[in-house]
Amino acid sequence: MTVLAATVVAGLGVLVAVQVLALRPTPRHTPRHAPRPGRGAAAGAGAARRVARGLWRGVPAVVGGLVLLVALDWLVGAAGDRLWGDDPPPVSSVRPLATQDLPPAEDPRVDLPALADAPWADRYFAELETLDFTYVPYIGPRERPVRGRYVSSVDGRRGSYVPEDLPAGAPEVWFFGGSALWGEGQRDGHTIPSEVARLAEAAGRPVRVVNYGVRGYTALQELLVFEQEVERRGAPDLAVFYHGFNELSTQTEAPENLSEQPTVFQLGVTADAFARAPVLPGQVASTVEPSVVQEYRQTSVLTRLGRAVGSLGLVAPAAADDGEPTFYTPPPEEMAVAVDHADAVYRRTMAMLAHVADGHGVPTAVFWQPADRWAPYDELGARVARVGGGIDVSRVLDDPPAPVYLDGVHTNELGARLVAEALWPTVAARLDGAAP
Image (cartoon, rainbow, N blue to C red; front, side, top):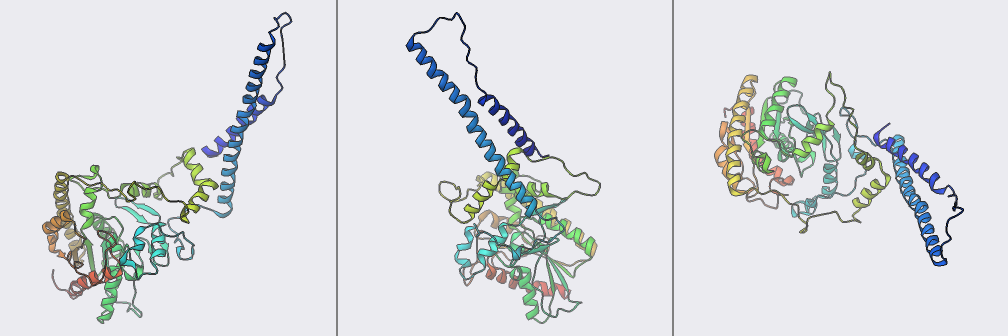
């Protein structure tokens, strides 16, 4: 029995006991030799007794009604969970998101000019908003397996474009990065890796691309994924790393993130993913139950109805006074320190990447990504973009033929195409064996 179930049963028991006491007739007893009060005093005493009896019976009735309502709300929700199921799918299964009806997207980027010609945008962001995460030991969060209309991911690899009649021996190119490489703002078949695959096909030399990008990841996390996947699957023909923005944003996301060591980006997402992580071999599953309030919110029919009404846009969501989200902005002295820390951590990461890649005989191509006008990021790029043979492509989106940015770093599919065109010559040369 869960904590909430025990609480409901106990509450009902107390309710029954209180109602029995409240409804039991109160015997009248007047002492034989008690002095008889005056008429006015008797009337006042009678009124007080009636008020007291009303409160004695009325208050438990109101409280009892509320308890019964809460109990009924929870029982109906719990019964619905048993009949139709409301638990997240196992980590090993693929969630069939493509066939599910989803509420309209809440992401305001849906209405940006960069997505004016994207009729699929609302459904895309609706899928993006419903993704669940699990936790990969020593690395961080990763999407649970999902197959949507526009967003698919299985075993940490996002869906990508595959040329028709791709030869079995076609070169395999792995891509690593954060959300810009993963493709936030782009459908599976139009991310940066997918656009590179299209360019390779058009050039008559098709390749198989594998998108290992994960939203929020830094270069160090990319390195760890690369090392594990090489050990697990063997070496690819080329490994491409595309990053930069998260190297600095990890340091500046919150005051406590400022550190000489690699820091955690989006700590809330990481903590939630850690709580969802599967039990490792030899471990005992946690028996910690949610609090009464948490369990009630998860099960309550009224809470679910409230969410459904909110998803229809009938109730405006809570927001800051100016209607805009608020972000932490470090003071200038902290920003300067953040740039120094990001510089040092990135150089250490590139040294480790070179060691791992050389040890496995994997050629690499490292690119420093574009971002939309952030002076500290430009300063960091000037310092480290070319470390370890890196290639600076941070200016390729400065003069696009149409709007591409959805925010400071994520782009639409045109942006992904322009970046892929900047990457492809180097990718082709490295596949031909050209040295960095």
